Length: 308
Image (cartoon, rainbow, N blue to C red; front, side, top):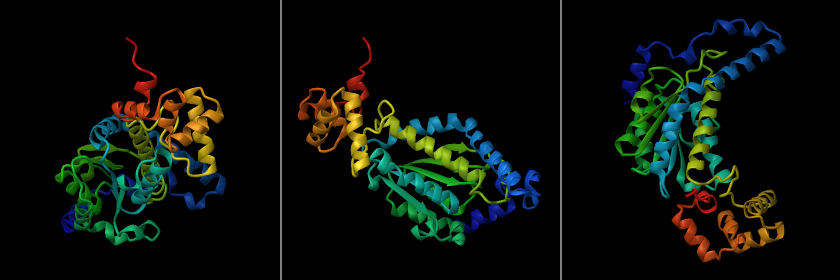
């Protein structure tokens, strides 16, 4: 797989991320203020590239929410800068949404050490990507997101192809139109960023667009899964003083209870904000647990039932 993917890539025209931008050919001769202003403008353009991708992102969120349920995993796959951006998104799921660590995986070319030390040759080994996906034991409830600026990275293609063959939902995010990754995935998300200010340095525009796209995708997925209610982190666990103050404030705001009553409810609920909200509103713990089980863990059907 690595040889085939690599050969195909050599015969293709260079992706947009590796082309020279006439706008920045004199970058190294500019004064700092001018250079920074131009680089800032390129970042704004990268964020603007998300707009046309919103329908594809929405379709991917809907498909992922339908698949992942109570047991499925969110798996990210990539190499280099793309994998590091994905790893940040994965790492932030637990503190923000209490997403279980066992349900967030990152498959990175070169292994975990490549998060801090570049392992450039590893991205060319498609068989390694397929093997990593196989070792993860992917199944029909899992969702794998492959990210690659060029959309032709052999490792990432190996992961996506193997995930799809195993029945997992596959999502491909790339910055190059017509990229093989987009064709290989169930859901294709094109972030059509322009040529980079420094040709090939995808940590700039392409990386910014990828970060924003993953922010949007994972946040809206967690919203769809009931881990956000009225703009609040209702699954967050109060593991330090700041988070405990936040949790008490959330319970108080959503239940109408005083801070003292909210804190007592949170303690009685073993720090589960959703349980504490319902208990502070007068439910017994058993009734609150049953109600949440019936609503698939969502507060909105319980606190804002549809009219009629």
